[in-house]
Amino acid sequence: MTQPTILLNDGSQIPQLGFGTWQIPEEKASVIVSTALVAGYRLLDTASIYGNETGVGEGILLSGVPRKDIFVTTKLWNNHQGYDETLRAHDESLRRLRLDYVDLYLIHWPAPRQDRYVESWRALVKLKNEGRVRSIGVSNFQIPHLRRLRDEIGVIPSINQIELHPYFQQRSLRVFHAQHEIATESWSPLGQGAVLRNERVLRIAQKHRRTAAQVVLRWHLDNGLVTIPKSVNPERIRNNFNVFDFQLDAEDMALLSDFDSPTGRIGPDPDTADF
Image (cartoon, rainbow, N blue to C red; front, side, top):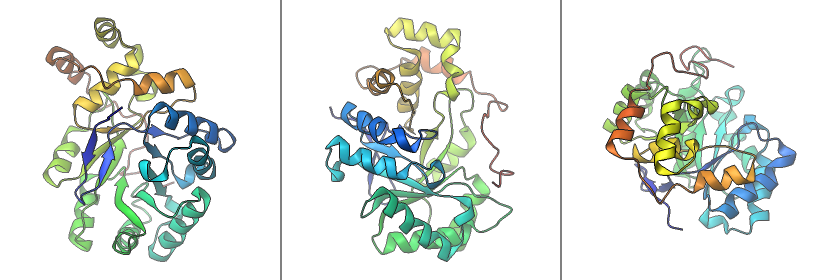
């Protein structure tokens, strides 16, 4: 199946629909990741803090899908920020994943009270320049954080992975991304399930003869977003990937657009979160 990709500002292509591994236990990750790859996913998203990088690497091997066909993302955790610490953390993630490189390495949070994300970004630029990672980006960065990276280092991230779902659409941040050729990637794309219980979403799903999750994931794709749903249920994993043969109409998109709320955030606020 041919699936859509997004062109990053460094020339790389990232699959638009991926598989997230947050909260998947290490001991289950290999089988679940293999299931996702066999179902057709080619973008995998993990992080050092998830504690499952070893299982994700094992799942890649178990699936039989060639490494060159898989786009692997992992992330730098807050307690490893800083220039030298970032370089060491990257190497440790590679060791756990049993990979020669990752396709995308992200700073997981700006952690503003630490104020080390600029030096961490400098290390990511070094990794990219040396060919040790294919693309570099950030996660949960706000506009001032992005501007600071641009102004102090002169290199803009390829992607910013942020909380984004119909209840919290991050429009001003997405406008900034578009102006600076930063791709937007949605974590918690289903709003941790809350959106799926909305009666209007259920009506749209009935109209298209789809699940509510498929409708919301299609909303992300139709908005030009990269998105990484997670499930441990094999049937849901397969159903979430089966979204490439329909589109939402203008009425559907307008209805879902109205869900946006400034109080819709579920996760931590990046301006104050400092784990």
